[in-house]
Length: 338
Ligand code: EPU
Image (cartoon, rainbow, N blue to C red; front, top):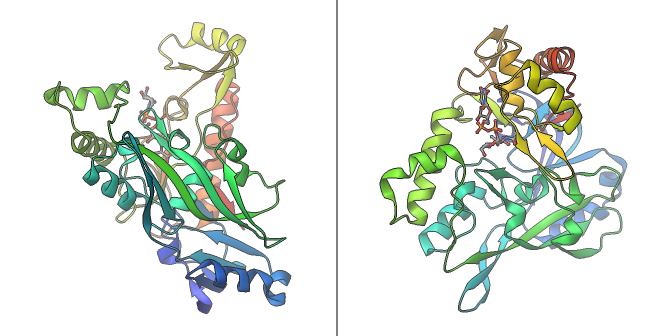
């Protein structure tokens, strides 16, 4: 176990904000986690469990305890003719898991290549890209209840997955810390290639496409469109893509015939937030130390010395402009920490 006081979180938030945590605690296994959670001082403090901080916006220094897992490992727990079941420690770097699966010829997560973050956080967030979400492969999630200290295994259904949502994101539910995720992958992969840019990038490889080709194509698309958080501070998409009613959509379509859209469940329509933001004139513009990325308007960047408050202010002016022009409410995908 590692315990640090007044600890810099610079390496633990991809916006590169130079914030500090009053306490930083890192555990190696479930037994150490149990000891931390039962500690009386821990119970008196506010706390936040983080992964790599690739989806966090720290507004200030954190006055409580930041918890971080070091539970690692990728275990093959079941194998049959068609599939493998992997048990993955929550602290594994998600992209290492994808690289490993692809190297073994196991399909299902290759479209989720190059997404920053750790496996546990990926399962909380239901990460998704290029037509695939992690929920498509999740079979079970192992957790530790932060209040009752009980271990509980959630089935996929109990995780209540939706677009960028799970049981673990809902603050009305008792807090559960994910220790391991179990994912089922396919030894005879079926590829998901309907996403426009992915299809185009792979055009040269048809019909002999491999998992490695898909991983390489996804990496090249992401490199082209998204800033590398190792170089430019950012947290990927700042907002989720909004869903609107058919009625609202029909009205907007008359005024904006070129508006891109994706039909969704329950007669709702998903509109790319990036398009809405671009229409409002933010794309490629800088606001002090905060940028709106010139190749993808959904990404806010730290140009060097931004603080969390400044980033939140730019996000707020984007939200207000989109609301004013389209009557659509944008919701941050990024979690604000105050
Ligand atoms: N578009 C614009 N302007 C832009 C960028 C995009 O108008 O600056 C429009 C285009 O019409 C484009 C459409 O938006 O066709 C969709 O753009 P893109 O394919 O880049 O996807 P996105 O909806 O903006 C989502 C995810 C990404 C994921 C990509 C690929 C969300 C919030 N974001 O972005 O996830 O990589 O699809 O599947 O759902 C993330 O969550 O951090 C993330 C990067």
